[in-house]
Every structure is written in structure tokens, then in C-alpha cells.
Image (spheres, rainbow, N blue to C red):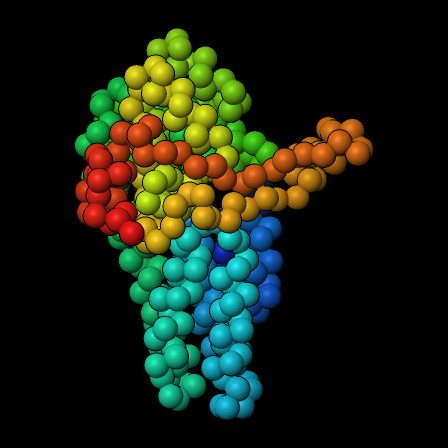
Length: 339
């Protein structure tokens, strides 16, 4: 999958609507910041690096809209929109990182028109850099994938989760580009099926062999010796653990029991050494994502559900973190993660 998944256009911010895949492939345009916030919360755009790009573009969009107001209120308006973007989803750190990268530069500009032009330029540069970072992650990670390997992945850490190429799937793409024979086991990733809807769609589109399983089947396949290693993405890497899509911790525990390497692929922008996992707000999503499926009720009325979007995996279950600068094999001892 080579094309960009999120981009700037004159009407606003263009993106692939990920809620429609794999049935329909459609582009949408977010012409206002509130519409972009809605797209983030509805998961029309999702994935930590993609959210960073969306946050950066969102500040550029806020600047363009604020030009319609008086110069005196330009900064106040942009800061208000930036605050809405930062809080759209609380757990993935890249969203706030992308917003802050552009907002800090905008606040240094005295002239609104110059600030708006700078914001767009910086957002475009951040999107370009995201793709370059993913390709460097892929190049480093390809080294740890043996020829003929079967790789388990969870959720979607591919091009759809970035501006292009992907993190965990970028590693797989790079290994395939190096001539290695690689097949993928894609966990469906309940409740919104990002693994079956998005990961399988991406890999099938690239003619990379992929098989989808229910999440709870992974342990069985590990027991049968059918999985050689696990590679997942990350939404926030704290001082003492890694947040990723709910279910990741389960795979890490099972992989450790079966002595299967467990790797995380993520850019440095996902690192947050300021917090421990216990200090992070973990997003809880709505009841309907679990209580109904395709319009059919699957949980009796009145029965509560728990719907955490992410869980935390401690470093001692992680074989290494694949970054754009190389592979960290002892994350608990790495200086990036010191307070």
C-alpha cells in the first residue's frame, strides 16, 4: 500500500474512511476542526502515527479557519481548536505530540497569514517524515524476521495507522521487499475488528499471505508451533510499559510462556518518559461497540460491559522495541525512558 492515508487539500484534510473498510474504499474531507475531531473519535482515522499527522494537519486547518476572524483573536481561536484536538482521544500520545509540534511554532509567529503558511508547511513536513520514519523502522525490523517466518500481529499497525508504509506491518513489508518469504496471522481484534477489516485488507492488497483468526485462537496456534514471532505497534510507551490495542498484553504473556519473541514497532514520537502506565488515562469506549454487532443485540439489556480500548504490557515481556534509530533490546534500561 503505497498511497498516503491522510493528506492536505484545499477543501480541508483528506483521509481514507477506515470505518468502511473492507467493504468500501472511500475518501472523506474534514473541512473543520470539529469534523476532524469527530473523525478521530469515530475512528475514521486511527493509529498512533496517523493521529500525530492528523493533529498537525488539524492545527494548520485551525489556522486557516482563524484567518477569517480578526487578527486579535487568531491565537486564541487556534489554541482553542488545538485543545479540542489534543483531547479527542486520551491514550495515544502521538495526537498531542503532533498538535504541539505545529502549535508551538505558530505561537511564535506574529502575523496570522505567516503563521497559517508555516503551520501547513510543518504539517506537510511531519507527514513526510512519518513515512520516512516508518521505512527506517521497517528496515531495522526486517533483520529480525527469519526467512519463512509466520508473524502474529494484533490490531492494525500498517499504512492505515500512519501516513504510509506502517510500523509493525512496515517491518513485514520491508522483510518481503528484502526477498524473505513471510506470512502473517492477523488477529481480528475485537470489538471493532481492525485486524480482520484493516490489516488483512492491507496485506491482501499487497499480495502478502495473511490468515485472520479470532483473538483467542492465538494461544492455540502458539501451542501448535505455528507462530514464529509476534510484532505489534504501540500507542504510548511509558517508563515502565507499552500501551497498545486491548488484547496485546494477553498475546505477550502467552508468547513468553511459549518462548516466542515479542516485538513492538514504534517511532520515538510514541515514547512518553514523563509517565508510568498507572498515570495514563486509558480510553473507555461506548457500550454499543460490544453490546451489538451489525445491528444485532449481543448483550442483554441492563448487563454492563467494560470496553477499554488499550492495555499495558510491561517491558519484561518485550523482546525489543523497533524504532527508526534501531532496536532497543533492554527497554527498561534505555535512557529515552528515564524520568
